[in-house]
Image 1 (cartoon, rainbow, N blue to C red):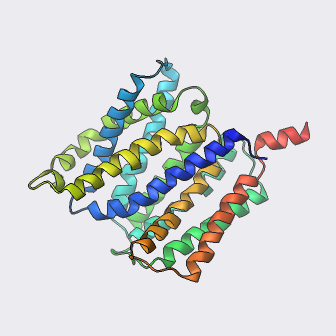
Image 2 (tube, helix red, strand yellow; image 1 turned 135 degrees about the vertical axis):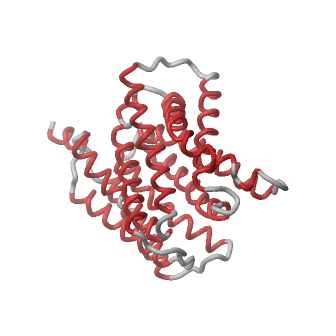
Image 3 (tube, rainbow, N blue to C red; image 1 turned 180 degrees about the horizontal axis):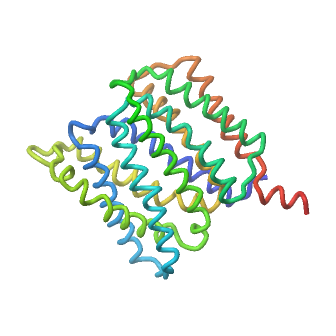
Length: 306
């Protein structure tokens, strides 16, 4: 039976991935003509850093130990800097469809890492759920009417794979620290560290962003504001809150909601068409998430033994 705490965790991570799904279409309208990929990446980090530090001024102050600061630095590298940097660079060297399919490996990485680091069991139901969800997500990507442009590239594919693996590491290692500090405290340090690391390498890209030169177009400014607030600040505020309540593997399974949400949005705005294949793929996605949700955790197994 799902507790209220877990229900909140599921609801929050579902919301996060819906916001990310909407961001796919918006980012496509911006990149790379109006905003450079690395310029947008730095802008997101700077904005989130400022917002989280400002928000922390209105909340009770939390002292973070040096040991946990070191862990938060590692989280910032795996969960933000390396993850986003490698993905953006990889995307410029391969096709979007390849990058999307590669990202479906994340729950597999998380499941294995959680077993090694957190001693979470890999049950048959969990493994089968990950497989079913991945099948549905890949089916949605392949059935999309928006044919990917660009050629597949081994370097680009490897970078996207490393990006997915990096984020998987973050989901697993960040689980314990979410129980010690608030979401705002965690994120203000993570975004500060990641911003300081990538700033020297992406500063020129931000300065040369086309959207900030010449005539200001309100449509592009609103799109950028969505990316900054609803696709960066809000989701990263909710992710640690959700991670505190549900398992990393379950959280990663919700990544499969992104291609589903993006497909639904594309159909609604006339960029794609509905098909039976998409319906079947959607059923696979939700079935996979449900199976992983219902699989036994380490605590469940220990309670049943006791």
